[in-house]
Length: 177
Image 1 (cartoon, rainbow, N blue to C red):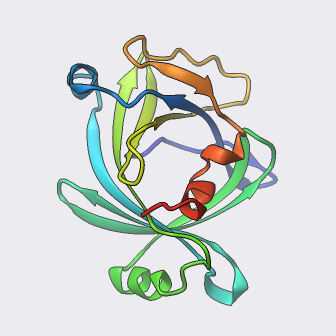
Image 2: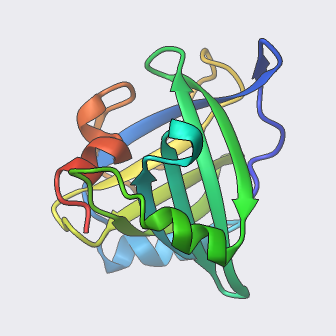
């Protein structure tokens, strides 16, 4: 699901994102989410790799209703909320080859991503296979000062934007499976 054109800095695409730790949604909450505009669900497998030419990054397999797509992504932090992000689609064969270069000490992250619109904002809710005690809610922003209107049907525990403990890279080190 596309987020539109990314903001640019120094001629490079920038991801500006807020991330929230939330209570895993119950069935009633999921019923509400599934009725939201632009609702979509996909299965994601994400692997952090040593990468090509010594450049690390992550690869992602994303299963949609109409098939599977594969991506290579490299991020470079600007500050706690913004990162330079380079992402491009790759073939299944390239994904399989790169997956063999998994970064030492990490595990693949497997999760379901539920995307939905709330008050003209496109949220991504991740439910992880390896730990059912928490979920995360993300929102990509147009700028760092953009106001976020959180869905009133989601139990937000904390804003964890910039908290490295809840980055997928850290989660992959802590047993992602």
